[in-house]
Image (cartoon, rainbow, N blue to C red; front, side, top):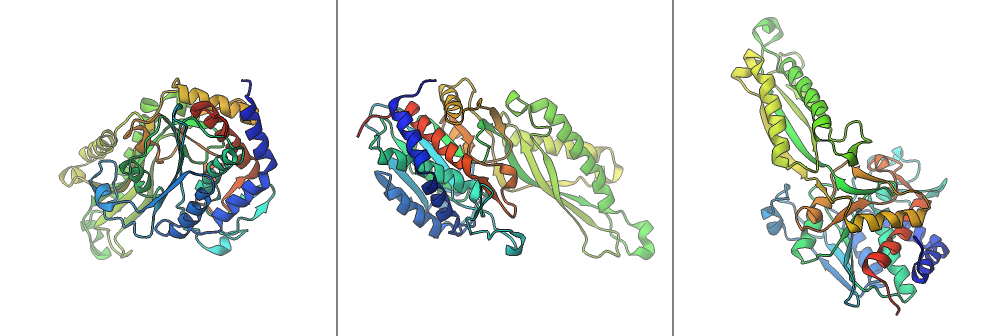
Length: 425
């Protein structure tokens, strides 16, 4: 679509100041913010926001409130020294409001020697910026801060409020974004930044951790014939979960997730039997993650897996008498979906096309994220998107392409101009 003079000026400003955007991301990456230790980086974010926002709100989420919330599954978490930071660009009172949400917490970088460039270096090589959190999620955070800086530099005030949220705790519990709702932050639409290669994702799947405990009968090798191996009894359970996974891909898939062979995985990442190898194992424990569809509740997904385990047990006399025990662990993030036809989705999609010069892509986000807190629990039309590839997140040599950081900032200023409205100084 044709662009206004204000939009053209904003895009030109970002192109002129590309190096400043890269430097901003390097600054954010250089301050470690592993889950539980986000405070120092959040102090830096607050300082940056004070230069481009009308008000900055810094507070620690309330654990007691979170523990009572139906969407929070990690009770007992401490938020001491782990503040949220929200900057508000006040509108002139006649436009639609917008939340821009990014998380500052990152996963542990692991062994430093596994990195070609240091995990906190922010090194730039081959057109990519490296470091823990570079793509997940500080590139999105930098893009939204830079879009606000751009409008401030050009003297352009939005007609509607723009709320910049730098939240903690996304990588595990999601308490940071939930706490913004308790604080009263709402808007007419929201963008949740996660690496999507600038594809727009109006839906995200859910994911929850589980444990299945299978009982056997221990025995010394001398009398192994009197034992029943819990490990061997767990094998049919594993096979049943694999069949369930395949069934659910067909039964629950929506068009937004068509490109993923497995969009709702059931992954068993840990199998542990008795610690003594020279023994018929008495117990076997399977732990994993169950992905579930945006259209499901977590209770419905749980019932599906529990029924599967029960059906496997019913086929085996030993397991029928000693049903495997299914437990649900602390990690659980629901899914959510905003209709593709919603005006905000269509507007953002057009902005991607205009800012990048390529056809916009609409797809589902194939992982859990903070989208449901805004879309499902606050009723805010929301999308997920951002620069970079989510498959390099959490690994050594995590990186984000420099051109996508710039493109993300351009998309954002167009979205703000078109959704919120932008006037003069």
